[in-house]
Every structure is written in C-alpha cells, then in structure tokens.
Image (cartoon, rainbow, N blue to C red; front, side):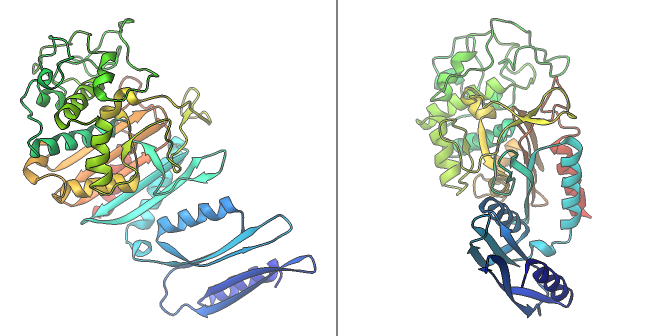
Amino acid sequence: MTAAQYGEKFDSFRDQGYRVLDLESYQQNGQQRYAAIWVKNTNGRGWAARRDMTANGFGNWWKTYKDEGYRLVDFEAYPTAEGTRYAGVWRQNGDELSWAPKKAIDDAIVEFRDKFKVPGISVAIAQNGKLVYTRGFGYADIANQEVAHAGTVFRLASVSKPVTAALMMRLVEQNLLSLDQSNRSYVPELPQHHTHTVRQLFKHQAGIRHYRGSKRGEDCIVPNNPDWKDSSSTQYPTATEATKLFRDDPLMFSPGAKSCYTTHGYTVLGAAMERAANVPFATLVNRELTQKLDLPTLQLELLNQPHPERATLYRTKDDINDPNVPAAWDNISWKGPGGGMIASSVDLARFGVKLGNGLFLSKQKREELWKDTLSFSGAQNGAHSHLRVYFNEELVITVLSNQQIDLDKDDPEKDESGPGKLASTLASIIRK
C-alpha cells in the first residue's frame, strides 16, 4: 500500500474493531510502500501504532506510551529517501489506561502547564502502595524536542528538605544520631555561638539565617548584609565544608525562641548527619536512599556527573508570559541537604510510599516529623516541585517541573497557585 492507502485502511479497520498486529515498510521502485496485518481486538484493550518516525521521535513516543500504560509489541526499522525511519505497535499493559480519574487528571495537568507556560512537567501518583499514574507533559529539552516523561530527572529544590528530615530520623532509629544533642558535638568546626540542637535544626528553630534579604513573615526578615554569602560556584565535597559559607554569621535569634525557615540550617543538619554516620552526606544519601530503597534517580545533583534523563533548566526573562529560555546551570552543592537533590517523579512517589508503609521509618518516628500529611514545595533556578503524602489515605502525589514559577518573589516556595495547588486539585479528583 501507499502511505495514503495505508492511512485509509488504518482508519477503516480501527473503526471496525481491528488492531494492527504487524506493520512493515519497504521501498519498491523508489516508492515507499507499507504492509500490515490486522486482527480483531477481541478483548477491547487499548493499542496504538505509529510509523515513519525519526529515532528521536520513536524514543519520545516510546516514553510517552510507556507512561500511559502501553508496552511495545512490534518494532520496525526501514530505509526511506529521508534516511532510516521507525515504526512501532503498542498494546495496553496493565490498568493505568482504565484508571477512572485518568482523563480528569490529564486535563488538570495540561491546564496547569498551559496556564503557567511550563516547558516540561512530570506527575506520579501512588495509591494503596501502588503506582496508578505516571506521566510527563511537554519537553524536558525544547531545542532537542525531548519529551518530559515519568523517568525525566528534575531538581527537587526544597523538597530535598523532607527527604533529609526522613534520612535524619533513620539515623536516629539506628542510634547514630540524637535529636537533643548539641550540633557542635557533631561538628566542632561550628563557632561557639551555634548552641542549637539537631531537633532545632530540622524544625527551623536554630536561629541560622535564611538567604539575606529574604522575608518569611514579620518575624523572619533577614538583613540584606552585603558581607554575607548565600551561594557559591565551589563544588563542596561535604555538607560540613559547605557550612563555611555562612557559619561565622550571627544567629538571627536564640535557638528555640521561634521558627524561621532556613535552607542554610539544613546544610548544618546535613553536616551533623554525615559526622554521625561517618560518611559524606552524598554517600549517606546514596547508601540509604538510592541503593537500599532502590530509588536510582534520587540523589544529590553533581554537575560533573549529568544524568542522561536530566531535564534542561528554563526560566522566563521577566514574567510568566515571556518565552522560556534555557537557564545557566548553577552549582548547588552548597545546599545539598536543603535544596540540592534530584529525582524522577516516579522515584519521589516511591519514596513517599516507603515513608508511609514503614519500610524506611517506624510509624512512631515518622509521626515525629509528619502526622497525617506531608506537604512540601520547592522552587529554585529551573525547577518547581511538590511532594504530597496523605498517610491515612495511602495516597502520594508528586509534581516536578523544569521552570521556576515565581508566583511570590519574596517567598518562592509559597505554593498558593503552584505545583502544590495542582497536587490539591489532583487529590480532589481522586477522592471523587
């Protein structure tokens, strides 16, 4: 058949309840021809067939269909006048396609992505310990036309903090770390004015400042002192080394007096943890999370070790209506425990499942961190992220993207209309 004839047969047989079993293409007398076998789709399960794809196009569709719950059952590579092209046939694999909320979930994500002009977004949902939805929308890399999918690796930004807190509590259960111990007993390099405890660190009560000039409520305004440093292009090998950036700065208040959000405080927490475990923080993450929990993409970001599925970072020039342009990669090793991790939406969701089922922490220790719900957002250069776990409902929702949505310039992690709002919308759809 010619391409036109195949297209006509494809539509006709599909409408009659047939599916493609095998698809091939040949060149005959300089013309491209197509052959196919159709069979009755007796069980009514979903299927899809595509042809004349470039290698990149085939890869994109393979990832997209895998997300939606299909498996590849026929693959062809064949010569054409434009070079090698590819065809594939996919069949429904599992129940994701027939999950009742799927269409409404898809529509809500697309509406969110279009509204905020997010280049790429990935969402994973787990219910009762099982992944029920894993999908990407848009592009992980616009220039190379690489789609975002469930396996795309994004920056977690401040969603790194609850991951660090859970890892901290694991060390407590292993009797390696004490919450009420002075941090200087673990990190004696800290100047003497650091009189806070481990517990005060993870609760943001240690008095360690956040970024200079930041405003986190009337009681949490950090002076914009030009002598203070908030970031660095240095590749810090440990969290302890990274504390050099700010540890000589005075505390903002007496430890325990109040709570003021601080990313730098989590760097000190990471330093205490690595000293307690006697390994660098990156090694601790790899050992306890990446390896033991089998979460291969959940790790600290290393610029010199790029992940093959890592999303390109994007930004808008001035406001959300401007076109997305690539953002320069910045070194975030100075804030690994509080904002330097990466993961796919699937691995982050699986982490949430393991938090709830007791495989990583006992219920007692988990409830010292979060009672019924864990809800946390993060935003930084080229990323906006959210992790939501409803422990009593056994429901986990993760939303990762490759553009920071600056909805609140003073508090970019405030998520009234960002990925956190989307997670709430998705939860409402599921509950209905």
